[in-house]
Length: 137
Image 1 (spheres, rainbow, N blue to C red):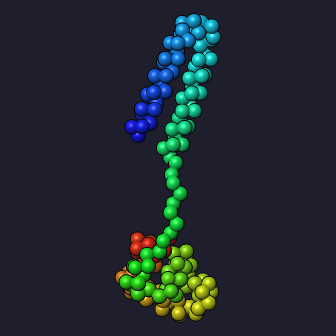
Image 2 (cartoon, rainbow, N blue to C red):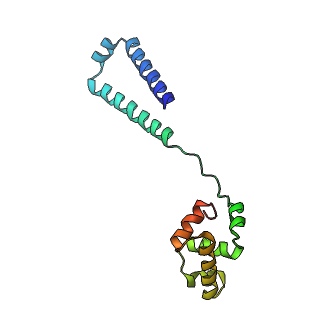
Image 3 (tube, rainbow, N blue to C red):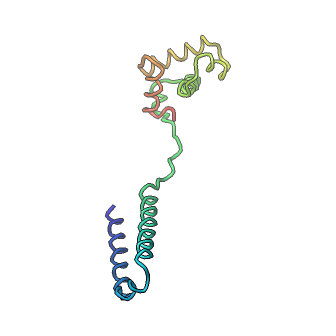
């Protein structure tokens, strides 16, 4: 932020110097006032867009890295992880069963095991805790 303030201070000082250098009195009589107002407004608009672009520019997020240590410490199996990812996608037990090629009862068993291992009571809690542990994106 300090750098931005310094840059703008230098820009304004340069503009003031340029106005003095152009002999402000002569130039203001040669052209109508509206032209100067337009030029100043355009300069500030362009500067505002530039500053906004610089302040809001963000680096690309890093790719998701699964926390294998947490998965191992909780004892989550590969199939339970697949069920957890489907839960995070908002799928029902029947949809998960179709997606993974399992019976709905097997999905219920995996979900119950997940809830037990994550020490939660509901799907939303399981997904939230899994995201906090970086098990799912």
